[in-house]
Length: 236
Image 1 (cartoon, rainbow, N blue to C red):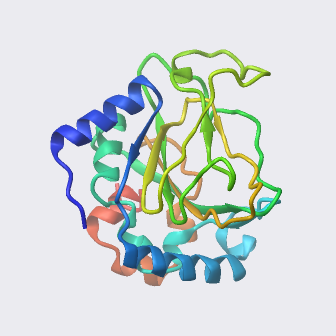
Image 2 (cartoon, rainbow, N blue to C red):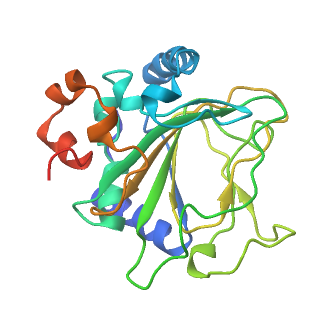
């Protein structure tokens, strides 16, 4: 597993704050990618909205509540350097709001540009997303598109999408984005696999997208580490 310096972590945190996103390559190993591809396909097939808290997303393979699905996900959100970036951006006591996975199907997945919350408030970034790319993303299989720097304004999305870029990254990369930057998934024109895990972090005290106390099983909660329990807002 790769290691990253404190200077690199700070540089990525600065990029999230200044331009709205950062790309970290090599976070997931080749062996982990093989494991995740099979594991996510199994999880997609057994997804139950009644148990996991969110309805299926039309046009996607989808699952929420991943921490309840496999021990791998019980520590994934704490991994260096993604969790370190979250703490630099959101504060040392930030929490995980949700851990979900999406995969746009062929010809599906196109979204309109949006923010994952309100425009950036004066006190700074209140949430950030981390997109863990299991298959790699490009313009043909539905890469996330975004407008760099748009987290600094409250303007609505431009109708012509002027200024967008595509987050094209190899497998194993993590794209970290400000919740306030204009962004959207794109259509999967090619039909090639584009499985992505979304780890959404927010400041402590804000509501979670998946309330972990409610949706994590007693068995999973019982063997989580003290650090994981705190980041999941199970313990104060």
